[in-house]
Length: 562
Image 1: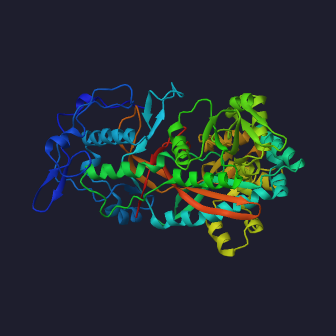
Image 2: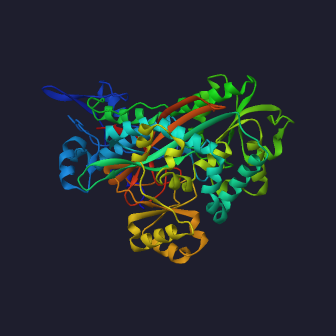
Image 3: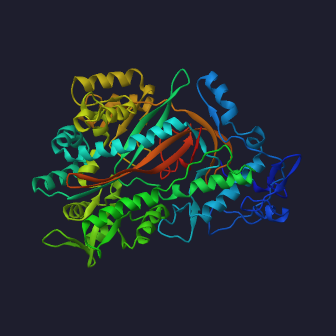
């Protein structure tokens, strides 16, 4: 990977213009409104930096006039006919894409806007300091998303909320479904042991809070049509609901700098942080103790703190006290009263919102697992509760795709159809004839599939020849049951520019993943809240098979609906 291109290559000045009838455009001031040339030049006439702490020299880019951006992303599809049909609607003008100085000019303005709006992360070197921060990586333009698929993902989210919640209540189903997984995967076994102990002691949560995110890609068919295919459902610590609130305005600002203040371009507004906060607040109110607090259970090293703060501040605005604690803090500071009321340093806790605990490296040892069980054992509303954690596993996803399984939990035929339409092919690797057929299928054509372990956080999936290598070693061993096999989605490709610290700017062929946040609250048998809570679009270069924003591969994006 390369570094930023030599800043000295950029020239003396930058004056952004907007077209007008019969003549040259007028310069724009930093907000995108007509103004004096000096104001327009000042948009980018100051030191640039990837870090808010360490400034770097920044050149100016050449003036350009009468530039009108009709569309934002060039759709690159496998079907040439479909590409030609979409090109006029979805292409970035060649003079923009090929103008390196202009791209740098726009990117630097966008970075400033990102810092202005808190679209930021702590540095890898200093994950617990906010004095040195980087902008969270993002696309320079919003990426094309078919409107029909976007709406489909929104409409099915409440169905998935209901499905997840009902799966979490069917303890016999979870026990049977995950039997082979817990025998082969230590992390899953640790979670399941807590679930089983609480079940044996008849410890349940009277109020259940679900904050999840269902992720999809756009599958491209041979005839150029596209369909929505679910990649996974995240029931634990679904992230970037905070930063994604501000990225629509970032892209609108880029459009203003280009002289197109949004006409004919739909970048939908988004407010997941407020929606996630609303879900937590409803659960907190049902807990019934106004002095009780919400506790965020967080990682020891927290680069993505600003994303979390967005949800936290939404709660403070509602008058709800928020604490941030690690598993280590819980070990030292938490206690349960005889009625299982949870106190941390003397403060009663109504809701525990897990932002850590979804991966093996979140647990430093047995003490952290003991802290996890203490929280799940308490009467505090844990998000997710231990059963909902298990309901979000890859194995459950695979079993739900089997004929008749969704119907076990969802009785409305229309809802079942909406859910099933999004399923890709999913295959079991259990130690039986079905699992043997799956191994043979994968070995015969590994590039058709993705091998998925029981892990969250991005960067864990296995592709292509690596599938052959792994199954060649474990294909006849119970170790294979720690994985599922999934059809590889043939993604709709888009053309965009990724803005990442330390990387050059260049148009790349990219793929996007659309996430829909779900929020629900159940009290006893009654669903008190069931809603879609906003969206998240992440985009990465086609050269990367796997990985999200936190893993350093994908970047934040927005849908440009067409």
